[in-house]
Amino acid sequence: MSQKIEISGYNAIPEEPQETLSMNPKKFALWLFIVSIIMIFAAMSSAYIVRKGDGNWLEFELPQVFWTSSVIILLSSITMQWAHYSAKKDNLGMLKISMVITFLLGVAFIVAQYIGWQDLQQRHIWLGGATSNPSGSFLYIMTGLHIFHLVTGIVFLLLVLIATFRDEIHAKAMNRMDMCTTYWHFLDFLWVYLFIFLLINH
Image (cartoon, rainbow, N blue to C red; front, side, top):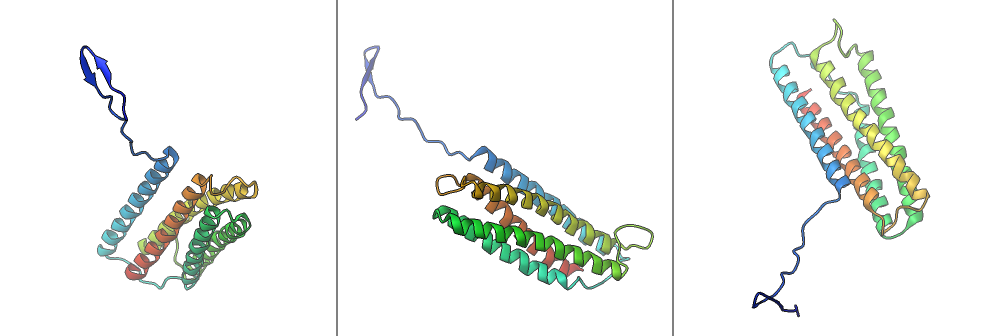
């Protein structure tokens, strides 16, 4: 029971402090970064559709390896979630295995995208230049932007991977794991959106 405090002849009951909702500053910064990426790709998608409507647009099939890279990145989302679950359960052995697999799948995705760009060049679809077409340039820019952000995700993944081998990630220290999982899932689903968008509008 709260104690009564007498102030100037009046009995006053002190107010209980109210709980405030708060977010970890690093997690908040991550979400701001994610929102900024969403805005960039929304702007690129809009510019793509507007430019396509202006004409002089080369129609071509996307590289078949993009289907493979889509499967790879979706698998990496599964292994990333597996790693997160293992960390929460303090299954540190499984955590390390799933983090290594996720890292390797991320690298495999980048390799598959590079093979896709080589396929485009063999069909004389270029980025910029007098012989290029806006459709090819947009494809390189949009997939290249995704690769750039995926590289940042792989660096983040590598840092968390190192922390797992130092036993710094466990059920009572999940902040870095939470952030890494969120960012990685975002990058995975960003590619799914981008791939579907390009399939529909290529």
